[in-house]
Image 1: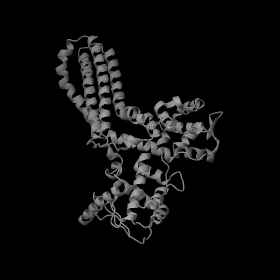
Image 2 (image 1 turned 60 degrees about the horizontal axis):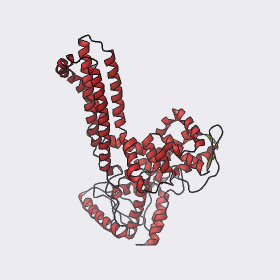
Image 3 (image 1 turned 90 degrees about the horizontal axis):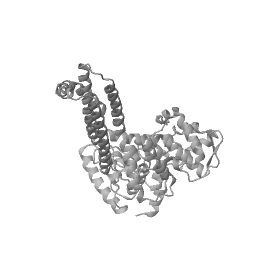
Image 4 (image 1 turned 90 degrees about the vertical axis):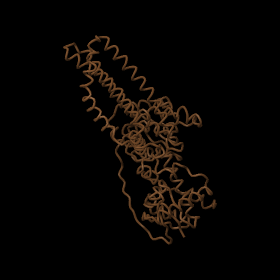
Amino acid sequence: MDNVLWNKILQFDFDDPPSEFSFSTRLAKENFWAKNFTQKAILEYKKFMYLVSISESMISPSETVDTVWHLHLIFTQSYQEFCKLIGKQIQHIPSTHNKEDFQKFKKAKEQTNKLYESTFGSQPKDIWEFEGMYESLNLDKARIKLRTFISNALILFFVLTFPFYYILKPIYIKIDNPYFLIGFIILSIISFKILDLYNKVRLREIVREFDKDSFIYNLQPYELVYLKTQKISNVINGVVNELIENKTAEIQPYNIINLVENKANLTDEQIQVTRSLKEFGKSVYPTLVMRMTRKPVFINISHCMDAFEKYFTKSKKFHHLFYLNFVILALLSMAGYIRLVTGFTRNKPLGFLIFILIVFIITVIFFLHRLTRLIFIDTITNLYKTEILPGRQTESNWQWNYFLFSTAVITPAFIPLIKEVNRNNSFESSSSSESSSGSSCGSSDSSSGSSCGSSCGSSCGGCGGD
């Protein structure tokens, strides 16, 4: 291994010069990638390009590495400097997808695996074996949407009302109130409790079926804060609080945040806050939060975690769990509804029963909505608390403490500013907005060519340079 060349490649900064919409930020945004996964993908891309530089034969990238490569080609100046550093001008040529290419790239993939293992060791599965970040979750997509299932189920509910009415009517006639109401309430409470316990157990089982190299096991604290609270403002609160604690920013009267000193070694999120304070001067905190929700570095956090939520809730495993809950609660609803119809046909007083059924239906809606978010607000949070973090040294890491203990670790003087932001809910809608950014694409001649394709049938898969 050429350690001198590898160290140069390793030190090459794709985000130089720094910008609000840098290479890594754009890569994460376009692919809905988590921050650690993005950095890992860039590292594996560097390894791939090193192998290209030392190999005389064709080298094949994975789908994820190829995604990084495609974006790097758009950053033409950076790509040219990178090729100059490794001593080869590597040209990206799409595959023609014919049979000869398939065999050629299949062989290239085998050669790549051998060369990689002899140079760097085992290949990370999440980068080299899966087609993207979310494939490591091992979740097959459901055939129908939840909305379609619910619509069809409601139609079936009313169709089944007629046979169930004639089945249950002879029984209901013999059951007087308040015995039915008491029994219905008790049965409903027991059903909700049992379903809640079962859902938590089943969701833990599903999470444990994720690949151990999955991005889920390597999330950053602020990504988990958003996943748990569903509010990007809570992430911004944590970032600003860190700046206050390390004396980079200070709180002034009338809920104003002021930049004290623009320090080095700040995180990407902290850099965006300090740049805003430097550009606009001291800012009323709610206004600062509103500006930050439009910054790509914060947008990426919400978009990635929202994409994960959608990916999971569209999976077969989640749908099966949702179906079970829906059917059980629908049967309970049917029991109450038939009782209501029976009482109506017999001219019985129905006021209290109607009230109970309305409360029950509202509870069902809330319960099913909570089920769609339970894995994010409960399962993964507890996974980190009970299994992942105990094996790490996190006591001195403020961000992890913020995830674990929330506002308990916030600077007391900062809490009134957070409350002011929480009272002003109008800015939350801006968390889904994006900053638009243009890009320029170009091509340049190269002194040596490479051919690219994929043994898996993708647009690109192997490279070699003279």
